Length: 412
Ligand code: NAD
Image 1 (cartoon, rainbow, N blue to C red):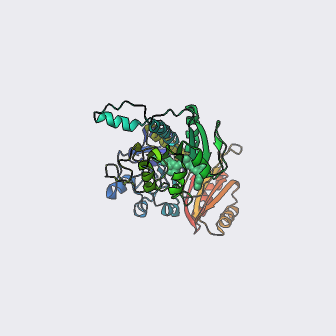
Image 2: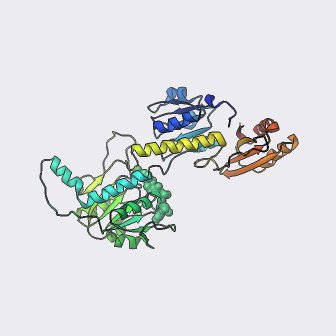
């Protein structure tokens, strides 16, 4: 399949040292890929991406309106991470630039960290290690437990929670979960009908819900008091969910035997910055700097996920997984006789009448449309039209000239 320009003239620029597997995948698709090890800003950033059709970033490169406005050829952005705060999504959409992210490629990494912490907390591992580093031979079984036979309560049975469930059962734990959506229990896990019940029946509670109005402050004084005496709490989800002052009190009073936290209400913006929390110095509390999803394997999975999404977007117009424009998942263009239809991709302002104008153009040009897909989202519409090759170029030009059109390209 060709795009409106030769593939080797389609420029992809990847910043911030994204994993090389994704780069190799894009290169094997015939695209010209330039890479930069670090993030860039100001004139250096514009020099690097100003002529690019596709830009890939991780979390540090800020693609503001000012930056995006200086990238006239830009078709798509790949965020090689879960977050998209670094991109002005609304402005990108208004320019017909699709932005993709990879929210679930680090699921396994977070699940593995959680399992490691369940065992480490039950064995007071960090406490014993610190003592020995400090020269104290603290050989004792006091406060140490096996996890086999203990009950794990999982709040949020989504991508991560359900993986934790499977792994926890493999090491002999009984698993309960609470989710606001109806979820199929994996293995021998059991769903419970209330958060209170889950808290009251679990030896260790682990949180895997998103940050939203239903979860902010979800675990406060009442909920922590419900956890069994001597229990543990793990939060590797979002810092807004647990009230840390109450948690500290529960640890200091001995109500909870330990906790593990990877996320905090106020996290430093950059690696190397100083950090302070009420949880520092608490007994048998593991603190990690939001590294639950930070593994080489997750980076590799993210790079392949984004490389696949970008390739399908460039080659077929598929926007599945885009966060700021309508998602359209398209079948391959099928040949009609000897001809392969041309595919016209058009982002336009989501106002009434645009489709009518497109149909009018096709009808007046006598172009036979063989397939059509339309989705809208907020202020943007995305229409994909497969048309007979003979007049598709003329139709593309007419669609491009419609007032509401934002960006049009053709695949052939
Ligand atoms: P997911 O969307 O796959 O699953 C979330 C689950 O929570 C869903 O099943 C949903 O129905 C459920 N849920 C939502 N609101 C709920 C509520 N009020 N009560 C009970 N259940 C509720 O998300 P995921 O990929 O499993 O991620 C879970 C959390 O982990 C998110 O907060 C995410 O930001 C965080 N995360 C952290 C790291 C890290 O580095 N520590 C990495 C990846 C994800």
